[in-house]
Structure formats: structure tokens, C-alpha cells
Image (cartoon, rainbow, N blue to C red; front, top):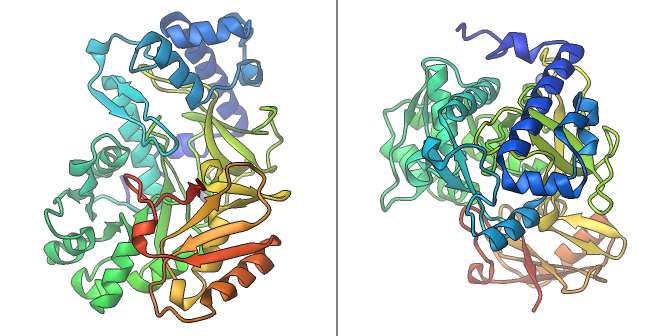
Length: 436
Ligand SMILES: [Zn+2]
């Protein structure tokens, strides 16, 4: 594989939209048959909606399938006792990997892959990582492969290996992640650093006045998967002194997506592998491309545990126009997560909206913060708790409140709190807390 090549799989990446649709149709028909014949959950779900595999003749028929969410899976699990929520389409004995979702919005669900799924998933991740800039002979890091094998992190490590990169998976033992990346790996001459907890890493770099390129002279970029606000990107690139490349993935279905050099902040999806669409989150009616709505994904490749028309609980916009990079696959722009939003009067405010304001002030740049959600929605006032990394001073709360209010068009209150008052999830700060 030539390093100068733009795409990992050019034939698929640049195929015409007509050919892509044919491929999607063929794969959707196969997936609907697969789940209907093998998954107790889907058989019951489709029978209740009075839809049969024979109703699906092309990708245009996808809207005949009912939309499913995490609650449907949990309900099925509760009544069946099946940790796979009735969605497994192969015998358990065929699974070579079993993992759980992150459980960001509730109890995690269990998923599995057979050998063919593993091969295809690592291929998909290689495609995503090539777009990110990983090349043969690159040296990169991914300690999370060792620490959190249940997440897409191990897929990210194996995708990089497929490209021909070397992945350092040293665990951080009692050091912080950033110490491991920057100091334990000194001399490893990393070309790309996978970052994990950006707030802590940037704090460490600043405090120790570290120049990452003095430790890793051939460092070309840093990469990770976040909801990436403009403020976050700016802060990361200032601290690390190299470009930040963003990706996205889901622990549920191994859904890799990443920005190309032209698409940022939008991510390219692999449309031959996943069908993407947006729906109105109340009516579940499909929305036209370009309109903001909830992302719904259909897995067109997995044999063991595919989910079809699965609500991702993210608000996005889809653009299927060809991209300057040559890819014909959709670009998806993230607006925020439903779980991380509050409704204030008639406006939905996402954590990213708040982040862009809070992180633009020196005292609260990169500070951990939380939106406080009232039990009844909508609420009258936007309430935000934030920590202060710089110097706290009188009047800071009301200044932040005024800036939030002006930027977001709703009344706002800000309370400065200690870090112990901000809830931390398994892998990230929880951005919304519900008021008692
Ligand atoms: Zn592109």
C-alpha cells in the first residue's frame, strides 16, 4: 500500500452513488433476512410492526422497518434474561469476542462478534485510520487496548496494525496516561499519539511546560474520538503543537467514522457498511438530508449481532454530496448528544454549546463542567456548574452567566464548584446532571 494513496480502499471509497445504493440494497435485504430468521428480538419486533423480509426489496424500503432504541433492547433483556437482548444471530459458541456498550445513558448491553465480523471490523477501522493519517511504518500508542478491551479501542489498535503501523500498548501503571505517552514512551519516536483524557493531558503539558515534539520529534498529529467543539480543537492543538484529527466510534456496533482533510468537523461514514439517516426524535419520521435530527444507523455487515435502524441518540446533519477528497460516502456533522442536552424554554441546549462559551474564558478554559437538568422539562433557566482551573475571582459566575445568556439566547445561571461535585463517568465527564 502506497503511503501517498488517499484511501485505504479506493474502489469502495470512490464508487458511484448508484453502485453504492445497489450494494446497500443487496446488504440490507440480506441483513433483514438474517435478523428475522435468527434473532428472537427482531422477529418479535418486526412481527409487531407487520413487516416481513419479503417487503424489503431495496434500500428505499428501509423506512418500512421500525426504529429501535436502547430501551427496546433493555425491555427484551428484562423479560427474556438474555444478556444479548435476543439480538444474537449466531450460536454463542461462534463468538470470538464479547463486549458491552459504554452505558453512557443507562445499563450497558452485551454484544458479540464472530471471526468474520472481527475481520470486517478491523478492515473498517483500518479504512477510518487511513483517512485519519495512519500509514505503514507509523508508530503510535494505544494503552486502552490493554485496559479496555470491551470498547472500540482494541479495534483501533488492530486497524492500525492492519495498515502496517506499530502500536505501543504500554499500560500507564501508576502514572498518568500523558506521562506514559510522553515520558515512558520517550525514544519511541511516535508519529501519531492517541489521546485519552484531554483535560488531564493538556493540564499536565502546561504545568510541566512540556514540548511534545522535543520528546517525539516526528510527531505528525494527535487523534482520538470526541464530540469536538471548536474550543476543544483549538486548546488541543495549542498544547500539543500538532494538528488534532477527530474520529468517532460506538462501543455498541463498532461504527468507525473520521474526518478527512476537507470534511472537518464532519466525519465520513462507511456507507457500504452502515446506512445513515436522520429522524425526528419525537415522531421518528425520517428527515431529509441536511436537516438536523437524531442519527439512526443500520449495520450492513455484521453476522453475529447486527442492529438495524438503531437510534444513536446523537443529533446530526447528513451531507451526501461528493467530498473534495474523492470519497462519495456521506459526511455527518455532530451537533450534540440528547443525553447531554437540556430544553430551556423553547430551545434545546447541548453541552457543546455551553462548552464553546465556558472554554473561551482563560479561567475556565478546559474546565470540567456540567449542565444541570431540572426534573421537569423544559426548564426556565439554563443552569451550569463549572470548575475553575485558573484563578477564581469575584464576579466570574455572573460574567459567565451573561456570556452564556447572550450566546445561547436563554437566561443562564452559573455556579463555580469543586471538581468533587462534578460526576465522572467510566471514560468521560458526565455533561448533564439531573437536579434532585
Ligand atoms: Zn472527504
